[in-house]
Amino acid sequence: MNIAYIVAEFPKLTETFIAREIHALEERGFRITVFSLRRPRLTAEQLGEDRTGGDTPPYARSPAGGIVYPPPLPSLMLITAQFRQLTSPVRYLRDLAAILAADCPHPIRMVKALRRFLIAVAFAERARKKAIEHVHAQFVFVTADTAHVMASLLGVQESVSAHAWDIYTQPTAVLRRRLANAAWVSACTKHAVEYLRGQLPKQLPEIHYAPHGLDLAQFSHASNEASGSGQDRPLILGIGRLEEKKGFCYLIDAIHILLNETETLEDRTPRHSLKCTIIGDGPKHSALRSMVDQLGLQGTVSLPGAANPQTVWTLLSRASAMVLPSVIAPDGDRDGLANVILEAMATGTPVITTTASAASEVIRDEENGFLVAPHDPAGIADRIRRILIDTDLRNRVTRAACKTVSEQFDIDKTIRTYENLFRQSGKKS
Image (cartoon, rainbow, N blue to C red):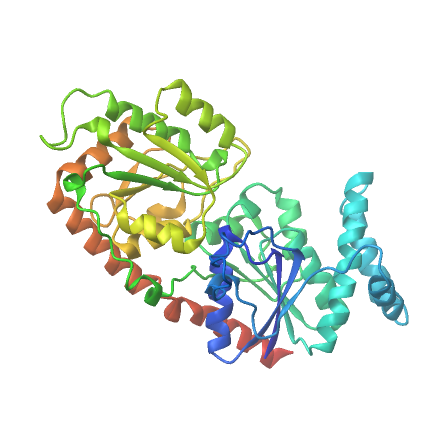
C-alpha cells in the first residue's frame, strides 16, 4: 500500500518519532512517501554525520517512496499542476473556497492559506504519479489542511495523527474542521484521546490510541553508566525545546536550591559539584541564560543548544537523572508523553517529571520514575537529592522503567495500531 505522510518539516530533531514510525511501517510492507511543507534546517553535525561523510542516521534517512518538498513559488511546476486540476474544476474550486473561507477575513492568513493550497495541489500531482492510496497527516494543523486537499483531489481517504500542542492550543471549531473529513484519527496519549472525544461530535471519526514507540535495539548499547553519588560530578540532564511548557526555569531553580544547601550528598560528593546540562533550542533560550547568570550558576548549568539523537543518548547514558519539569502554558499548551522520557527510561536513567503532562499515564512515583507537582523546584531538588543518595532506590526505579518501556512502548508492538488502521483503509478505498 502506498501512503503519503504529510509533515511540516522532515527530518526534524524534535520529531524523530515520525521517522521511526515510517521505518516500522515499511518493514511491514507499506511504501511511504513523505511530503514535507518545509525543507529541513539541520546542520551536518545535527544530522549525526562526520566530516568525511558518515552514514545518514535512521531518523534522517529518506523513506522508500522518497521525500517531496514544495516547488519554488512561483514555478512552472506549480502553475502546471493548477492547470491540470482545472480540467476537472469542481473539486479544485470547492477545496480552494473552503481553505480561503477558513482564514477570511484576515488578508495575510488568506495569502498564506492560498500558498499552502497551491503547494497541496502540486503535491497531489506528484502523489498521483506515485499511485498514492491513502494520505496521512502528522499533527492537526496546516498539515491536515494539506492532506485534505490532496486526498480530495486524488479521491482517496485521509487520516490524521494528533499529538499535544496541536490539539490543546486550537479552538474547538478549528479542530472539528480539520478532522471532519478524516477516515480515522489517532492520538499518542490517553489524555489526548479523551480530550478529542470530548471536543468532537460523535459523527466525526473515531479516535484511536496509538502511542509512540521506541526501537529498543538502538538502546541496547546505551545503558546508563552513572553511579549516582559515586560520580566525581553528577550530571543532571534536561532535554527539550526551550519553551514555556517545558518549565526548565524550575530545573534551574532546583539546582540553585541544591547548591545552596550546606551539607553534602556524601562525604565525597559536595552539592556544589553538580553539573546540569539543558539540551535544546527555542524562544526561552535567552531568558534561561539570563536566569543562569543572575543566580551565579555559570559554572554549573549549561545550555549548549540542540543535539542529534546520538549525542542525546550518549548524555543520557552518563546522566544521574533526566528532568522534564513540564507545566501548562498560559495558552493551554502542554506536553503529551515526551519521547525523551521514554528514551531516558529505556537507557536506565531516572526520570523526574511533573503531573502537568501525560507522563503520569506511564510513570508511577517512586516505582518507575518520579513525579512532582508543576512549578515545584523544591520537589525537583528533593527527587534529585534522593536519586543521588539512595542507590537502591535508583536501581529499583530504573529497572522498573526499563520493564515498562519494553512491555508498553516497543515499536514492534505500538506500530500494530497504525498497521491495522492503514490496512482497513486500503480495503475500503
